[in-house]
Length: 129
Ligand SMILES: [Zn+2]
Ligand SMILES: [Zn+2]
Ligand SMILES: [Zn+2]
Image (cartoon, rainbow, N blue to C red; front, side, top):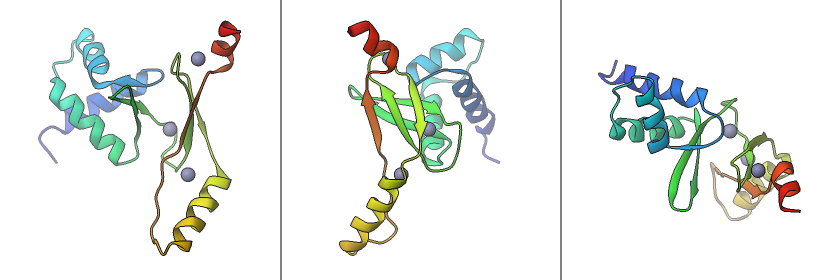
């Protein structure tokens, strides 16, 4: 067991209690408010690890990496509100077959992809109408 496993667990747990996407910095300060002493660098690393293992979603927004605990570890996609960050987990069967097909047509094997759709959620759409 790695020495910093408990810190990683703490990060995973904290991420699970937040709604929507958060930056490492925001998660770190939330954890500090609850008395955690996990360092910012550890939070960054733990979030990157979790995303790499498929336990968290990562996305780039305005140059910053944002993370969110996924409700499922199965492959899926997201609809993300660019104003309030509301996120809906979606499956995208047409994308799956398209990705496989276009990879095969070009001689690629073991294709992976990440597809997130950004827009305004129903609430934000109403507000801006
Ligand atoms: Zn997800
Ligand atoms: Zn919204
Ligand atoms: Zn997919």
